[in-house]
Image 1: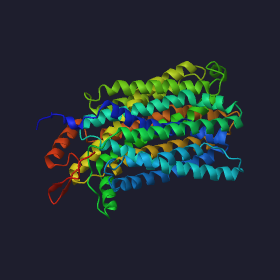
Image 2: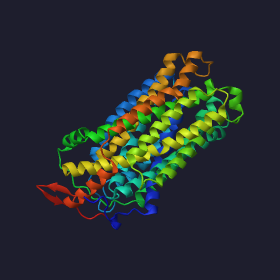
Image 3: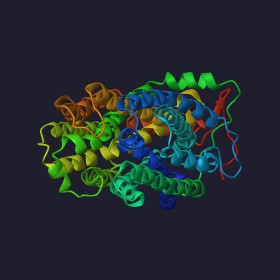
Image 4: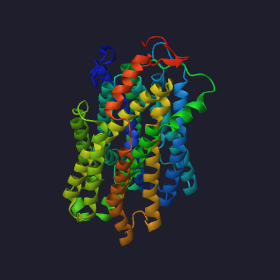
Length: 487
């Protein structure tokens, strides 16, 4: 079998369309990144609930949220195809406004009793997670039907990550500064006002970006219409798929590692780092930690861009394997850096982010490969359900990593705005270094088992073309069935 094939020019995704698709992940990360970087800190030091309460809230709501993603994927796969917009794009128009409203309200601090605040946090955060799934799972599935060409999907995935990292740069560079400026001060009341006003503005920007994504993208592959009563069957097919399961654990350990590091960073600079050295990086709220996140995000964006150039030439599995192991090795350096060496801490974070930044793009490209492989094996497409694995594994890693950050701090005796014990400070150092290294190593071990390398995907693409399934047809009784042409 030849290892090359001519690219179908009708399946080439133009630059403008890739840019439009990237706006969707930019919109998502205007809220994903604040919760990753400052979520636990916001709830303990600004909103005003205990670290232990935050830990349990994050764990329960995020684990429950992982159940939502496969359900949304199945619903999206069964949504009646719009004659002009396609199957997955309509969700960008339907859910954009609810996403903006709920996201802003999650950062509002009501004048309630401690119990009332806790209830409000649970309700708004849980609602945010559900609405996030309703728009992000179909958005992810959209990439799998934008082209049948694996190379085009790989390239689009890197564009997506550039959008995500650009939002991360905006959050890391400007969020705490804007909160202080808009809020009018550094006290808790000012921070509460600042968070709500700034995140409301970001909510409006997110709505606009999601709508633009819906207008600028196109579905070239037409999935078959799903039959009633096949939901459980499709779910079992996906959950029994070996590559899907392997990639779930790869992504879980990777996200858990990053979430724990990022979640503890604000505490690390406030309580562990030498405060005189921290002040040298700026008197405004979050000066050093903002620099930590900002330079890390810039480096991550550079990493995505740099490795994006090699996406057509380097094997994805090998690239991921090397990058995640190198990221884990760099993470251990934080344990040995003195707490007054802020510049070295920030530089090390930049190196870590440069290496780890491209890993998410590689994973999402691999999920589109799994969707194609499953279609080849079963003759049926479950793009939304397969791509839900990307969101599901992210959120499960987010749940465990984020919850452990708060729970471990609470169990160690952390109390907001008080001097911390040596045990708490040591725990912060370990969570910045050895814990992420261990999670990265586990992710690499699972990636070693992943079978869908680039050579196998080239074979699968040819097999799909031979069966008439490359553009979304379904084998029924041995005969390819095709839906109407995409708009």
